[in-house]
Amino acid sequence: MAEGKSLTQLGDLEIFARVVSAGSQSAAARSLGMKPAVISKSVKRLEERLGVRLFQRTTRQMSLTEAGQGFYARVLAILAGVEEAEAFAMGRGARMQGILKISAPTSFGRMHIAPHLMPFMERYPDLSVNLILSDDFVDLIGGGYDLAIRIGEQADSTLVARRLAPVRRVLCAAPAYLDRHGTPETLADLKRHICLKPHNNDIWRLVGAEGPISFRPEGRLFTNSSEVIREAVLSGMGIALRSTWDVGEELKSGALRQVLPWIEGSKTVALAAVYPSRQFLPAKVRAFIDYLGDLYGPVPYWER
Picture 1 (cartoon, rainbow, N blue to C red):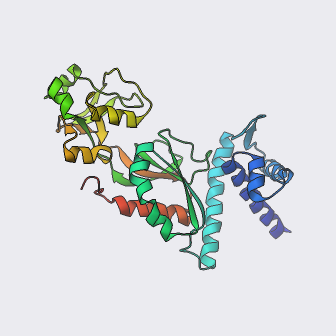
Picture 2 (cartoon, rainbow, N blue to C red; picture 1 turned 180 degrees about the horizontal axis):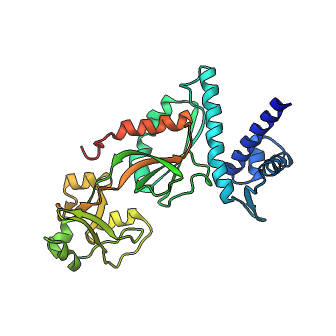
Picture 3 (cartoon, rainbow, N blue to C red; picture 1 turned 135 degrees about the vertical axis):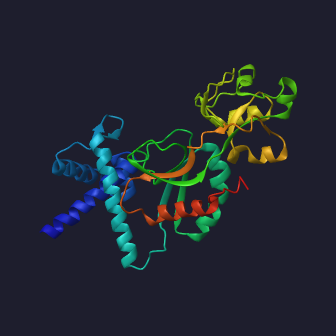
């Protein structure tokens, strides 16, 4: 009896995880080939057993409660452990199956992930990749993502981050802009120049010989797209703080020139793979993170 109960509980956990990743009970039912009533009964049984509400329900959508979010992260660990144990027992440790759902920044994903997907997918022909590009910090758990590639300082303590590569950011401008407005020679000179605000309207966090520097750029261009800022600096509109992974080729060709080269972006910013905290990573997630880590390395190819 106890054994049968354990199997039922494991099935409820799998259904719960599918409801979260699918976004609704009806979508989970379709993906699992089950009746919606079976899915609803499973979720209700799980909530009654735990004595907590896992979902906030409205007429249009379901969202995880705070307890549900924490429970989901731990359920993923359990299911990942089961998957890994099965793969080991069946001798399929190197075989990747299913869908790998990844979130990545728009520009970086287009420039430095998409061109390198083919070798990875050829290596694992049974694995599908769902790459979602967005400059927003997506909810990994709520969105059913396996991992996210992020650029910045890791702030969410509920997630695990593996550093993939350093991010070097420099002040730069097009030669046409510098010919018209002159080249700044000190940080104070920037106040007399057109400085292109980041797409998130954040301040420039810089570091120089005397330590950290904060500078708020002032300009008339407002946008929610980092790629718009990139095109603006290339067109000669002003000075921008850009990552070398983004404008390395332009700096090399002379389409952009570095200004105030003794001042760069904060060294605490890095490229990282972020995933829900869990004891065992699914093999497909570990394989993709290792692939990117080997691809970029401690000195990424865009720096070489």
